[in-house]
Length: 124
View 1 (cartoon, one colour):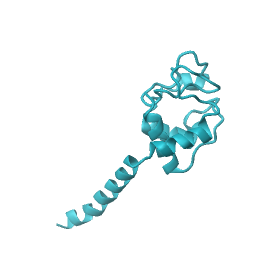
View 2: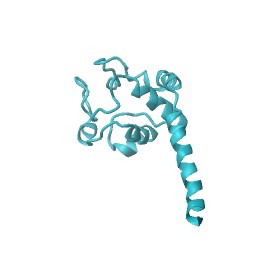
View 3: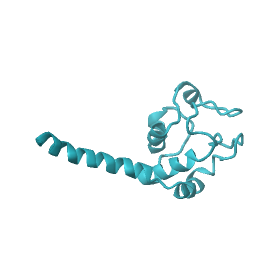
């Protein structure tokens, strides 16, 4: 019984974190994209700008968007842009991929990052 009482708060906390992650708002993420990302990135398939198109980015291997000239660091890092990797990268790009040419300083607000990633996940 003591073990159950000890585990219950841990379980409830874990469910709360999971619920927060699932409560991300793609519409709010689209607004963040327009404010902070659209100057360098397109969401149109194959339309690269200063940065690569982010259409279909969730699930894509880094450094593989066709017709975009990536830095050697992005070509060699071997990352797959899943939600967890995007979360880390968008927090501090230079820490995740040293020598990336992306000059963005990062999005420190976890809720805004979750919303942005939720929006990116709709682009397919």
